[in-house]
Length: 120
Image 1: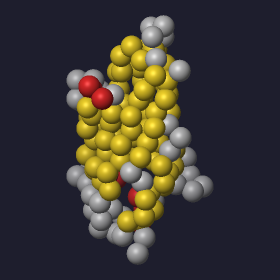
Image 2: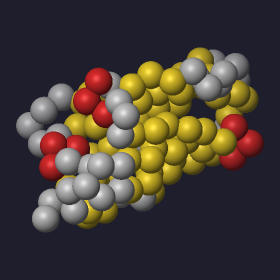
Image 3: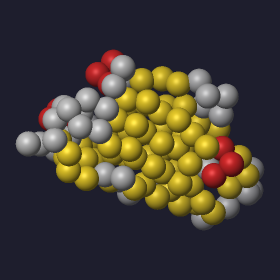
């Protein structure tokens, strides 16, 4: 079994900052890429940012220059530093990982999500 556990969500005022964390644990052989997605009420789940095991990053246009994704491979953890937050960033943020489990099967796993609310 593999688990992804997100933390760091909450309520923040416009212009503020939050840092999300996602730790992967369990029957992991190696992690390929990790990323963050978000889903606002009534909308589809969209890409926010991804990072590969060689630290190649990709961002949605809406967050470029404001959000930074990083990872600690030793801790199987990915972070999302969110600055200059806007009300439209309000969503449930989900962590995702593409990895080889201990059976050497390539799988995609998701966390349960953490709510980020940007409001005054």
